[in-house]
Amino acid sequence: MDTTRGSKEMVILAGNSHPELANLIASRLGKPLGNVSSYHSSNRETVVEIDDSVRWRDAFILQTGTNRLEAHVGRAEVKEMANRETSVEIMESVREKSVYLIQTANPKDVNNDIMELLIMAYACKTSSARNIVGVIPYLPYCKQSKMRKRGCIVSKLLAKMMYKAGLTHVITMDLHQKEIQGFFECPVDNLRASPFLLQYIQESIPDYRNAVIVARDPGSAKKATSYAERLRLGIAVIHGEQKTNEDEQADGRNSPPLREHSRIMDVGVGVPALAAKEKPPINVVGDVGGRIAIMVDDMIDDVQSFVAAAEVLKERGAYKIYVMATHGLLSSDAPRLIEDSPIDEV
Image (cartoon, rainbow, N blue to C red; front, side):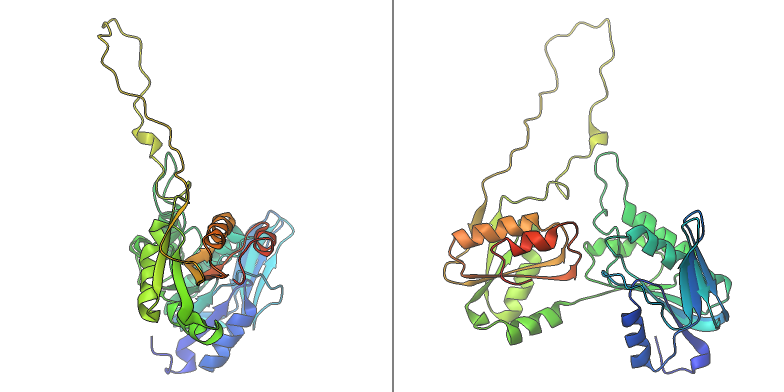
């Protein structure tokens, strides 16, 4: 989108998740942040108010931040009401402007961040903003992009909610599954962080030529291969450390129905019982002895699998272990587990 048009045609709005990033983006574009107020009402509902008209303006909604900051941004205010509803108030007109809403998922309050984004987008939509662009570096619920057992595809639900709220364009980074782009009814730009991570490896890891790129599981081999080819390094793949809650779960809805009582005689032909799944022993395909091991992934959330992989790499002779990812969620006690593990740097 052309950001060189007059300031009257574009407005930038920000939520509460990462005001510093919103200020940085606004300063780089030379545009002031719009006036918006978002807060919780007494019943914990989210309330968003945009103070200025956005009719026929391009609205860019900026909402991001894996680490929540309490400060408000610009002339947009997000509040929590007494009943714990969220109220958003935009302090200036966004009529006929482009509005950028910057928001992502804070692991400690992901659902509230989503509600802030949806309410801000809808406030811009009803205020006649020309375009409403959601800048969402980490798209929440992207790990729930497949049907498992009797669940649902939550990322598709979220995509529909964002579109219905008024988003006309979404900008995100390193989706957990690229297929998520197809869930949206508006354009989605899935940016890549790999150029910056590759630059970091070349400039900040001593003797990186003696490194090997490690895929934590076979599903990560494609990403690891891409890094290895660009750096002209070898690759290793860890087998056996499978994600039990990800791709390989059976869909429980395919289970046979309960057998009803019948007068038909059983002649001994039945469905054979399925053997219980067992985790194979962890094995490393590739030489990591005396090398620097660099594990790459799109996110670091539950780090137990990274720690287990690092222990195996250490046993195989890797003398230094790095973990690199775009989104550092680090939920629960992840920092402590990393400190107590063979991982040298994240």
